[in-house]
Image 1 (cartoon, rainbow, N blue to C red):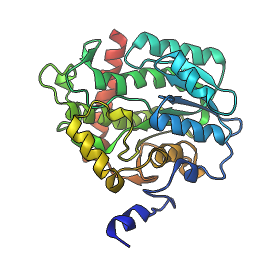
Image 2: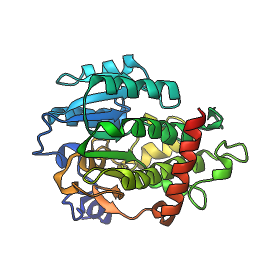
Image 3: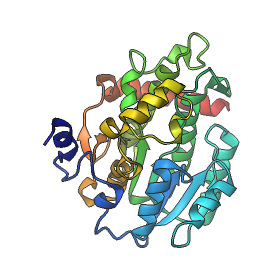
Image 4: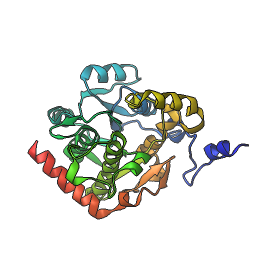
Length: 305
């Protein structure tokens, strides 16, 4: 067996690992009667997570940028589900989604914050802030904090972070350059947004009621349309080396589905997972002071919108 094959075949303490799929980690789990909110249901990891969790019996509240995209995605799934329009870069859209979900009267067993954008080649903004930070972090912050009261007593919040948080600026968050005007790098900005997702989960874990949990996950490297902004040569290399270093979409959706539903994770909160096992993030990804500073700054940003 090659070293690469051995690495891919390795399983951690959870019993799962690199090659486990979303179906593997949810095998035998009955989600009948459970309601799960998933952002980004219309493609990639969100679509696969929706398919598998619906197959296990969950009622899905599926969010996409438009109601049409959400409806089309959920229409392909078995069961009766609820489509919701939620454009994360538009606070009015996010707040409308919050109100729509509240009006449904449904309690949420899981909020799976899967949607995001990656590596925009040039600086773009929303409401004066760099677009990846605003979409990936601020949009989800508005959504989750707006729906915290809808969480069940053992409800779970799962934030899709990434190992790309290792590429965040020194200290984790450039609080003096959230607009990007003082310097912009596509990958540094993406890393910062993923660090923000990680720190948000950490901050949220401290604020939830006992029994409720919040965790961040790294799905692995997966070639989905999230990477559509990557330079041409990177996509060529990605395609050529994909079988060596990347996961399939089914494997990529595993960790978020594991953290969202597996009984073994009940009560585990404020952690970072990869390959369906607890892992250590970059040191500043565990820093309470930075997490609290980000929480306060994000509240300030949201209040001013």
